Image (cartoon, each protein chain N blue to C red):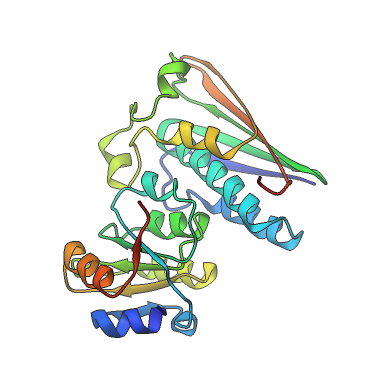
Amino acid sequence: MELKFHIMGGDFSNAGSASSEIKRVLKQINVPSDIIKSIVVALYEAEVNIVAHAYEGDMVVDVQPDRLIAVLSDKGPGIPDIELAMQEGYSTASPKVREMGFGAGMGLPNIQKNTDILNISSTPGEGTKVSFTVFFKPKS
Amino acid sequence: MTLQQIAELLNARVVARPDKLYRDISFAFASDLMSDVLTLEQRKIILLTGLANIQAVRTAEMSDVSCILLVRNKKASPEMIRLAEEAAIVIMEYDGSMFKASGILYNAGIQPIY
């Protein structure tokens, strides 16, 4: 099952609506609740990143029998130094983003914590692509 | 402790999902930073926050937070209430400070997360 969503940069009133829809779908197919939480937290962090930093982007979520694969690609400023962006506390968020309760430099590290496979690629001046996989196995 | 008991203890107004006040709460987390809320692994959490915007409700939805207590007399917007109703999240409004609510709940046996 593949689900696609378009995400607009700066649209904070709708940020999270795509992740919310995925949560509803995963509940319907009886994915364990702790796995659902990990997936939707990672999706929401990635969705908020697009709203906070990019002009626009797309979320494509492929739900397979044993795993979920998400690809979030955006048109935006990109990330010049991904290693630096992965460090907790590093952020380039605007004051507006901080007013919304984000921009603490926790997003990418938190996506990594909640996913089994994570790939981030970025071209400065063009955009960023975040792909991750979460397996539906019980956590040890 | 149930949300009903918490509402009575704080004399807080319940503005969304009063039908869920039977929920049991073990932990409280006090923060205006949603990035930190999204790192929590526990369940049965009440979130104490002064951040009265739609992202507080979205964050609660993704983090499986049972209830948002808006402190410092902040009001939930109609949009927040609509989303909380959909996502089955209780919202309460409280006139006092985050510190005061934290102290009362800690005294009543609600646990800190760390």
